[in-house]
Length: 138
Image (cartoon, rainbow, N blue to C red; front, side, top):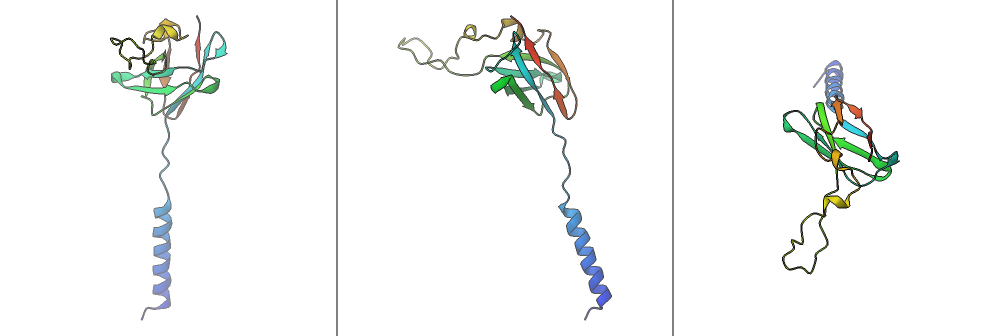
């Protein structure tokens, strides 16, 4: 038979073990977010890509209001591009046409200069949340 002091000590030890096991490590979420505009108006059609150190890339779709968010971006100085959204062209009756080719880039209102790295857009991504608005001009 256990003594009351031994029982209390055992219960206290178990309580400390259970409580300490319930704590979750806080993980800082890295994101880059902002608003994309074209000629001062929210732009709602495309993809924002971060081209980070070592060739690492991360992408995020442009949503309503021009908002975008990129989860787990590469840290450090990243070049930024804005490209037309991925998609497929409508099948045509031309037997030589590839029915699954993407729509022509010319159909997008995104100025060509923003589609490739080296366009003057860059952001220094730090741990945690980084805000970067993209103001495109024609």
